[in-house]
Image (cartoon, rainbow, N blue to C red; front, side, top):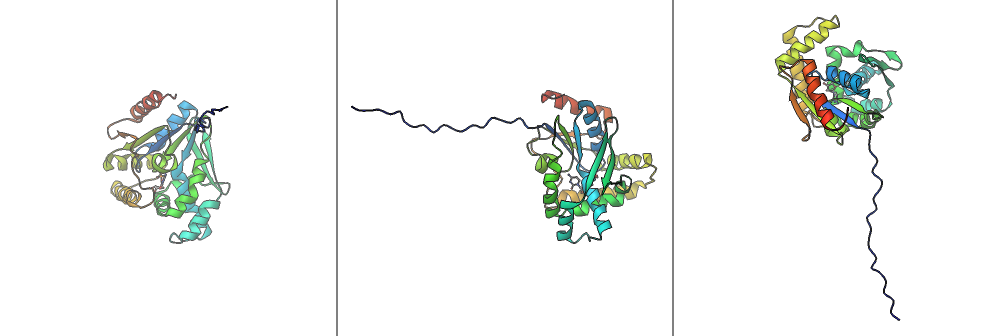
Length: 244
Ligand code: C5P
């Protein structure tokens, strides 16, 4: 008797696809309106927000307080892993407080100097590595609006929606000055332009996670647009992507 056995087939093991929490990644240079847009998106969608710039700003302040020099890469990477950060969000206003070691330092981290310090610590690859998972931990239901420079390229390469905002350097300096004035901080336009250009240059030219649009990002020039128009454009993209 001949027994014929069916050929053994290798059946691909397919794990049940786990639908990951949706992320809208919003990247772009200084003063392009990411913060305003992200707060409005989070408010409308009821999603969480990651202000990754605030994390680098907090780290810069943590380094100053701990006496870790900006050229001490080992010390900064260790600090990046351990420093105690916390954020308070208000549905109507977005990010209302950034806390370092439980203390509200929102005002201290918003100065131009704090931006410069953030950009210095952010250029160190081991610091960025140390912060990667801490940023990804913000991805929680029902969704995340992620604001930064490398949200769509490095931190959330699988983001469902990727937006890259641009605007002329002149317009960004003007917006930045208004933003600072609204906070009671006076700023000279020429000095602000120089500071913005220096920071953009460092952010774009660094080896680790440089400021760059992801190949699958929608690039939007906001130079001549109001915040409401930008919101409407981006919301339409999100909606077309099946969210909102
Ligand atoms: O966005 P914000 O101006 O608060 O960011 C401060 C600095 O932090 C940026 O100039 C950049 O150097 C750094 N940063 C970064 N990657 C991010 C967010 C901010 O390198 N995802």
